[in-house]
Image (cartoon, rainbow, N blue to C red; front, side, top):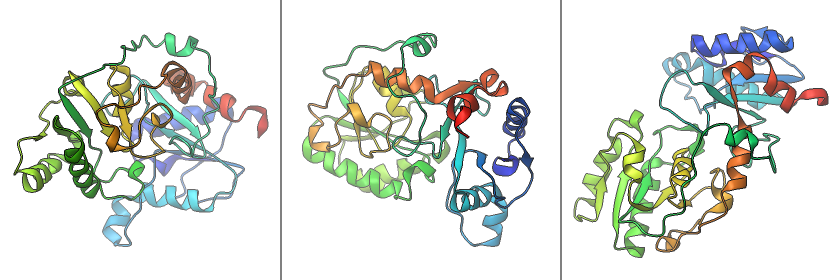
Length: 292
């Protein structure tokens, strides 16, 4: 059962419809869960307040929460891609996972993948950088579902405070574009007393990563951009896709782990599918196949 109202975006609804046609799935316009063997939704789900206005505005999240809470079979979830990421509305490919969309919770059926798929993406993996002049703290969307309910504000504050105890390098705080400068207020109000902490004004993360010593991230997809650029990552959540090859303690900031990346990227290539692949039902064959 494909829940077409799990996304309010017409191009994503159209993609779901074409996916349904290719594999012969039922599409429902219901705004509540309907019992099914396999449920398909588009996007992550956020907690919704009981305020009526909030519920109406985020009705797609109300639906997805209802599906996730009540469905007992397999759940297929479409999300934004992890590789060749861009901040745009319509993507060339999408992440498609089974039962979740984050590392450790989703089954992408991608363990020990061959390098062919990744190599076809034209992505360059730069050598690990040994030194740099600043530590980049990567922010996320203020209400990002992948934060799993933690306060981004408190995470930023506590992370920077701990870094100040463990490094003399500049600490650069990068905001998420959708936050519209919210983290700048935190940097100015809490850390205005020291010139060691700086608010990042770069638009492109490639500029932020330029000459960075390492990055610190919770679950941001920018962790992948960092590792591809050769900048080691300290990951603060086991749901971060870079968790297996990275340091997890801020005390490691001067000597972060430089793990083996190649196999991780080969596996990540199988978390996402091109729009044409989706229209032809290939993620369904890969994730569900004959196991339904």
